[in-house]
Length: 449
Image 1 (cartoon, rainbow, N blue to C red):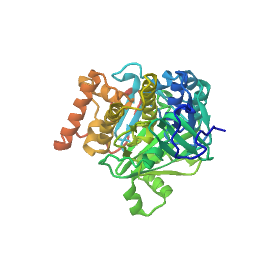
Image 2: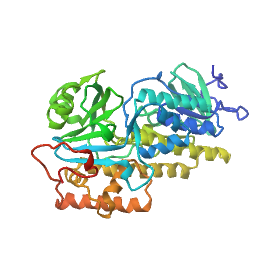
Image 3: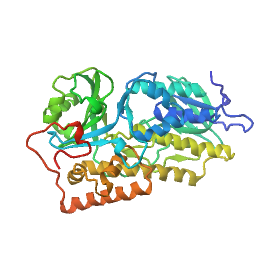
Image 4: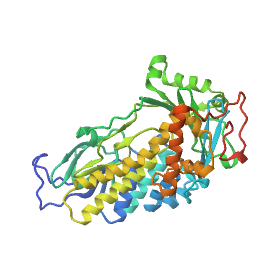
């Protein structure tokens, strides 16, 4: 039982003589919460994690990025991840709907060295591994245990759990994902984003036709006329497959999400061949209208991390990457204030954290916008190593959102070419009437351009 120094009244001011139960309260035990908890506990802080679900549980977002390996190494869990038997992901492949255009991003060929591979993970196992590591590091995990209510005072944070227990902390990190406990409760303003609402329909399948050899672990993205699909090998037998389209299109068809998914497969020669013998191993899942970004990612006694702060689009698998990176950064910011004995986060600290994270998200947003633009996609599917531009884009696909100057200037040039092409369309990636299966030797080239 968590002790309750507020037995007389929930709204009573906390006596200054009573030490809070925790230095840090963390909402959520997913990758964001676990990474922050592990880092803070290893640094000697008293950390309490509150996860509303019992692990293991199904979760989407199985494709990790090489630049995200840094966070896993930082908290000392990398060796466990390497030994867990997850599918190794050396690259990403992009196709058009008929497979006549193809681009293969090999992470080891990127502009930034040391980002050679990541993993495709079953989130049920991966998330449990991270949370158990947080416990080993010294974090106190309460599970299943949701948070019903959060109150911020001048000096402390206090929460009430789903089991009506109450506890206090010096600071709070909301890493609880899309439900956005703090964002909703505090009625935080959101940025206006220029994106139409989308919906993702997905499941795990057996019998999906997959590539072999060095390409066996790659994520495969297929761009469709009104959306795109992913194929992610998550185990020897199971493959995650999803279709992302527009909410308005689904409503207009009046189809069930499952029917809508299969119609998208049937409309693509490439996907139809890949899914010819596929059978779902679980029910279909639906995630809708998931694009948002809060205007600020914190306050005097709290910070937001991962999906609790923002989520743009799953196309380049940046969700778990930003969850881990943002929580690591947030933990460092708050720990620094505690070490200095500061009474709450200064506005400039919150602004600095917000600007830093948004700057990195913006790097990926520009690539996402390129992918959804027809003429931008033509540029993306016409890779050129002139000025090492393809290597630069390769590094962004690998998650390098902290860009050294050499990467930054090349990425700026790539985006300038995209903008110019959207105006005068001087690059049109070639199209073939029949699909030729790309060979492993044609790495880094477009089959159509």
